[in-house]
Length: 298
Image 1 (tube, rainbow, N blue to C red):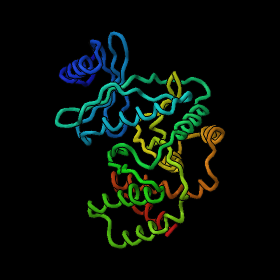
Image 2: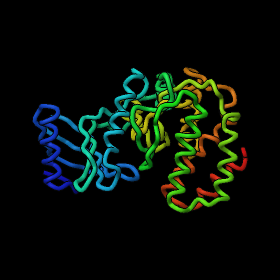
Image 3: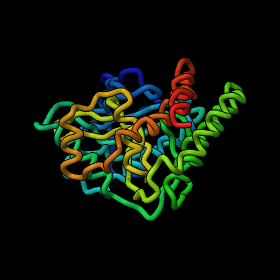
Image 4: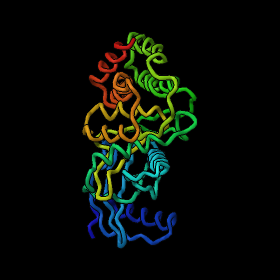
């Protein structure tokens, strides 16, 4: 039996949890390391009857995998015929012992017209709406906690729950000085006139860059989400920040659910959140990049 780098104790724990929570007896016969993203380990778990994907972590927030599972379940509301989402099966709290998320396995491959399906699938996801902006629980963009407390107004949510909240986290590290604060204050004062006030809450992935989708044999798959209900243009901030989405993706998206006029002019405002988050997580030049964006609008 090939068990990869997983200890026998972890393997047995997963088998016991599976039988206790789901019912059928699970017998793991092979463990293969695969990509797990920036902060998790990933494994393909082969059993006698099926194949699963396991994400493992010992150093992240305790509830991170529970929050990811919530996002994946929320995506089912889209009844999406264009993309697929991993089905969360088991989640275990992260702590002194490894925490994990077990999902069904997305076999890498292609199903034909993948870029078009991806664009339409994202559009279909964004068509799921809500009464207000936010989400049922806070969750994590990377390992950064997001304040998802509900607000009825989009500019207010963007100011208080996204940019302002994240700047407060950065200030706690002691690297945000009074000059930086003046620039961010001026920017935040202008946000209500920069963003549309009549935005409709849309279900978004929340961290949709090229590493968080894949082409599986079934259909394009959206993975590693931090879902919330936001103005859907907010999603475009991350999608455009590092590239990785072909023109066909955007064309297919707009055929199904056209973006409002002027979305590209607002795109940099939404990229700001992810620039600030990268500064919070990694430091470096991201701070100057964030300040340059804010000066542009302040």
